[in-house]
Image 1 (cartoon, one colour):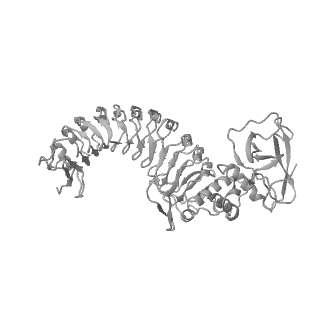
Image 2: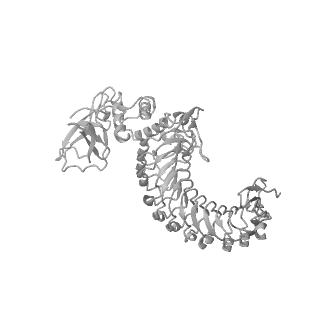
Image 3: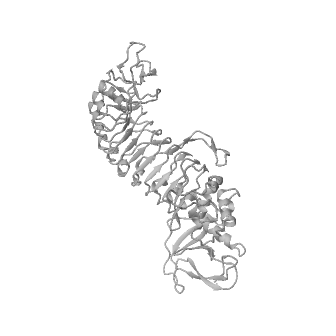
Length: 554
């Protein structure tokens, strides 16, 4: 046997290791406690016959040196002390690579606690073959390690159960503007006497502001609007039990790390209102527990962010997150109920496989660069309440079976200039519809009298299309209507009195600048009469010149 590792100097225990050799030539080392004085502990790493051993509670990972890197080659279960291995261990599926010069295999009796802790973090937490010894002193990972070792009153050891998650949270603080989290202090939950602690304090990390744990394991990090500034560390993927991550309304930039795919329990992800960019990683589609996804408003054209202490930071301008997020792989995320991708640079098509998202209630992709027809399969999303596809490059027409979306309350497709055709008859079967935005497309045809069936309708925008005919009097049945725009279309004739009567109900505003009812009722510079006669419009446009004016009908 051999004595190796470290324990705090006050310890009175020593250890030696009994070695076993399997038929495959692998070596196992069993820790055996001895009495005596000294400062030694395993620290979860030990070198035997040139191989690095990683001792866990139920298994052992064996490393061997390959081209100056330590490669995990096998995972085995510890045998009894009196028993050798009976067969060669199975190979690992996930290969872990760390520099062979790292502290994974170096121990010092004087600083053994530090090296053991450092070694565990290098193998179990650090990503992309990183090693502390190769980092600059100002690297957030190095700063986090130094805080754990030198400033943290918890005095964690290499075998502390919460070491990994405490390190990752500490790294998050140093990566995203330490000042913000240091001062985002003491917040009481509504209806509860529970009080959060400061980040990077000596308290349990489960009590830190915005952190929620279950049985001592981090399951939620909610830091919306905390003046966070910086890039996301890939090590955040090591919070394997994380279910909720809300970093919205901050100043995050850079890309979403590939390691996010490791968060297999993640259900709620909110990155809205930041400045993230780059392509969505393929590993993103491994988040099979995801229920809500909000990546909206990451196109950020302001190069300055203000920290919590008032300091101005210069950050990269972002055109938003890119990639083909709504193509075939989206069917992997079958539990999704809410998707918001507004104001990014997502492209490609909407796959017919979108129909696999049976639980989807909200799909919002406004202001991206999607370019495709809208698949009829989207009409199989029977639970969807909000469908917003505006300001993209969608082509073709509205699916004929749109009326199958019986739960639909808000439908927005404005600003897709290549959308054509007449409105499908089934559209008027959407009995729960409250908002219908179709302006600035190339739709044709007339507005059916069936529109009177949409009695819950509050907003109807048909402007800037090729609609013709007259406005049906049946629209007067839509007594909840608050906003109506039909300007810059070929809808003519006279606005029916039944529609004008709505202005004495909800189609009205006390704001004299409001354009709550807008039509082509301004006398034309060519014909000297309005294209449509309207006695109740709040704003009129010249059908020939597109010049509009607000009328004072108070």
